[in-house]
Length: 226
Image (cartoon, rainbow, N blue to C red):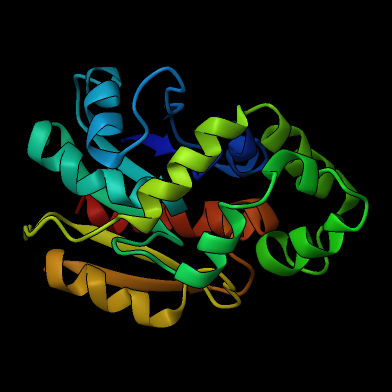
């Protein structure tokens, strides 16, 4: 079954490249628009018509997790399963987000000394120079105002008060410095048919462990469509 991927905070989908090189199924990446409001409800309205008109599995990475409840309310007819990857439904790590939203994000991201921060918080201490370089390149490609608006949306993120029995999986990165393990409880309140999977690695688990992640996603899809 077709896999539709929604990206993290950058919204470009460019960081899925390595993961998709190992994933053997049919897939579509939907980038988040930069020319609309960046709150979750507005973003969901902007991308709903880009979703396939046949059955698919929806994968939401990190930031995009908060879009899913809205998309289910707007257009769930063809969504046959959900996969969340290091996602959240309420504000994670509020102190860090508040600090980050006050910084010149792109300037900070390109400083030589920021490489340590990228590895420590996002990519893992053993991330390759190529992955770090690609991460910085993608961040630079997104207008800073858009990134800050998305951070504000995360800070305002709240459970919209719904439940669903749609088949769901959550991939948790075991060394996630941004989303703690207690975040799992928020998903249990909404998704009554959900299963937890763990992969050793940092927040950007699809990027840092693309082979293991592709294998896990393939196994999950078999489970979801049974």
